[in-house]
Image 1 (cartoon, each protein chain N blue to C red):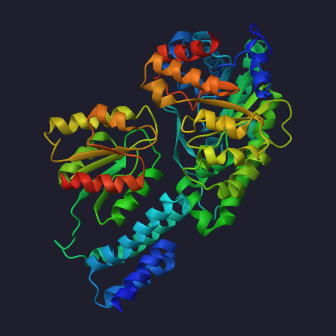
Image 2: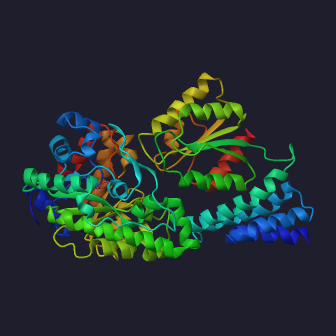
Image 3: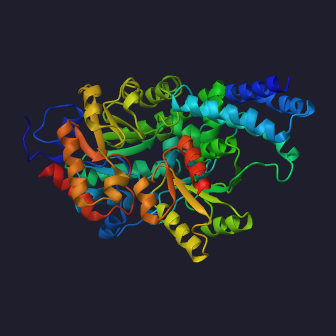
Length: 213
Length: 337
C-alpha cells in the first residue's frame, strides 16, 4: 500500500498534477508513512525523473516549473511533520541571485532540483545585498552558499562574496558554488569559488560532491 | 564582389540582403554602449535612456570611438514594459535598466495604450531615431532595438508565470503575448517612419533555454510576425540568446531578413544551416572573449566568425558596459584589416 502511494506521489510530481499533490501527501501521512520516506522515496524520485526528462529535452522549463510547484505543494503538508534530526538532509544550502540582478528562473530551477535531492534550502530570492548572504550563512550554519547571475556587471558581487567569506574565516567550512549565464568554470576558478554548475542537473551533482568534502 | 570604400550604411544593407562582399561589415546590433564610449562623448547612463539628444549622441559613439559600422539605440529592453505599467529601475552608469516589478496577473484586464509610440521612453526613442537619422543617417545605418512580444509578455506578468501557464493556462499566454504584439506593431511603425534602416528585435525569453521549438512556433513566432506586419522599409533582424542551433529554422519562419545569435552556436554550423537564406549577424562572445579575454582572443574569434561566412560580424549579445576598449578595437580591426 505505502509503496503504491509513494509511486503515485512520484508520478504526480513528474506529471505536474498539482491539484493532487496535497491530498495525496495527506493520504501518505495518514497511511503512516514517515515524512522522511515521503520526501526521499516519493517526491525526490519524481524530481529525479523530471531532471532526466529535462536533460533529454523531453521536458522544457514550463514542465519543470510545474513539477517543482507540485513538489512544493506536497512539501507544504509534509515538512511540518518532519521530526527534528530526521531530516536526513545532509546539507544546508543558502541560495540566491546576487545584488543587482533580478533574473531568478535559473536559481528557482536549481532550488527545486536541490530540494528534490533532499537538501535543506534557504532561498534568499533575487537582487539580494551581499552582506545578507553572509548573515544567513552564519545564522543557519550553512554548508554551501550558492549564487547565480545572468548579467555581467553583477559578476563582481560573486568575487566580493568570496572575500567576505574569507574575512570571516568561513572559506573551507562553507563551500561556494556559482552558476548563471554570465558565469563560467574559469571565472569560478578565478574568484576562488569551490564549484561552477552549467545547469540545475549539474548543480545537484556538484552540491553532493561539495558535501562529501 | 562589392569592394572596399563603401559607406558603412551601404555595406550593412548589402550584407543584410545577403550580397557577396569583399568583407562583412562589423557592427553592433545589440546594446552597444560602454563606459569608455560614454566618457569619450560626455554622455552617460542613465541619462541617455530618457533624453533623445543624448541617446542619439551615445548611439553614434560606437562608430566614432571604435569604428563599428552602425549606430544603435536605445540601450535596454525595458522601454515597452515600462509604458505598460512595469516598474523599471534605470540602473546606473554601468548597469542596464531592469524590470523590477510586474504589472499584471493572469485575470487582469489590460489597458492597451492607444498611441503607444507617443508615450514615455518610446517617444524618446522615436525622437532619437529622427535625430540620429539627421546627424549620421547618410553614412551609418540607423539601427533601432526593440523587445520581442514573448519577452514583453514575460515582463508584464513575470517570465516564470508566463512559462508555467504554457502548461496550465495557455490561453492566458496567448492573451498577453498578443497584447504585446499589438503594442509592438504600433511602436515599430513609428520607428520605421522615423527613419530606421534596421530594426533589431530581441526576444531573449523565447530562447531554447526556456522554450522548445514547438512552443516557440505556437507562442512566440506568430506574434513576432504580427509585430513586424506592415513594417515596410527597414530590414528586420531577430535576436535570440542562448544555443539557438535547433531554433534557427524556427526563427527564419518569422520572415525576418536577418538572425542575430550568440556564440553558443558554432558559427560554421549556423552558416551551414541558414545557408544564406537570411543574413547571419554575430556571434563573437560578449563574456568570453570580449569581457574576460585578451585582444588576441577577440581577434581570433572575430576572424573565425568572418571566415565561417557570417554576413555581418558583431558581438553575440549586448555589450557589457565594462568591456575593455582594447578588446572592442581588436574586434573591429580583425574584420576591417
